[in-house]
Length: 487
Image (cartoon, rainbow, N blue to C red; front, top):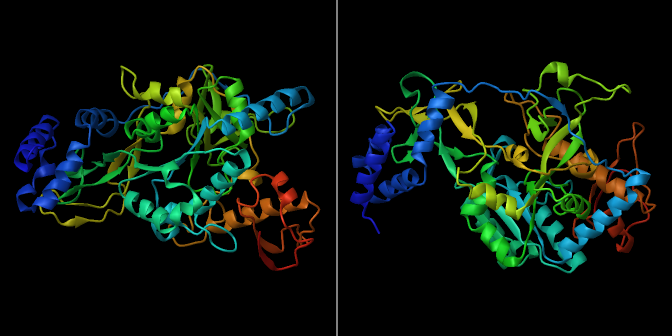
């Protein structure tokens, strides 16, 4: 194993070659533990790649290249037409068989902190449910637990963290006895980090330092999850278990169907490498990426990049022509991830440029800097950028109440409560879905004059992950107005 002086010499050479020698400027002032921390960070970064990105994404702004031909992407509807019924039934049966045969893994991207929620811990530990405040990790774990019992199988769960929240996440699972799951079937691994690069002044084009012994690092985006699956050994573990399909979800959505037999089956029947669920947009400028066929390839175009003349186009019935919004739910072939990560030309997803406010230190005085405006570029990859690389990719329409209740922000920057994608809106949607499912069993739900539900209802995934699961559950005949109920 190289000594600290040997590693220091190697780091000096690496940084000098990419014009970043300031990163190690304060090295002589550090103790051995701090030196090891800084050198470990330096060694974890592909500096030639960073140098290329500085040239293309910092010193220059990459131009937006929209495809020549942009059309709405076709999607399987939420409810099959009569001529689709047989195909849907075949797909659902195939999906259930793949789950039963242990061919499907759950993969959750959970690298974020709960900062925007006022929660100083991993986002997955945030209390999410309407009555008991069950954490997000517990909700997803209960879904997996129920599915394993329902299909008499093992569904391995792979959870991508970040270096900042990896240890607290693992500790949280241990403290909660892995929420009833077998620890041998739960794998945590951190994603890669990228240095933030200065955007202004003398720090322009330079890697920012968070302290004398640490770079200002940030996760490389949710697209980095695919590469991390490979580099962490998760793909090798999946192959050893005989897994062929990965169900990709993000941690902030407590109503997500962690494994959905119909979606899995449609994806597998069409031999798709990567498939997606979409949500009909509420309006032309809803802040969801747009699923499109771009020059014939499945593509997501960000809401801010889709030209207004396309965003506002309507069909003869008045509905949006570009209606398919991206909600970060995917099915992905194991072989596709492996091919992406082992390509002779390198990992294939492009980096995007994001201007951010990044706290750092002055590279000359080490005085802290708290920027009031964007001072840095972060490099991020997006998982949906893998879609155009697929030979086959399908889109399946889901329902907003059924499985889209994300928890992203609690307040605006000026402290005002946020009405959508917040803890409050998520709890309302969770109650709405529970009520909808209970009504299928003939249970009376109290409603206000405007139709909203006059109760708080928390339906545990251990009780039901589909409405049909309620047929064997011990349920009340009715729910009283104003009641808070856990089932």
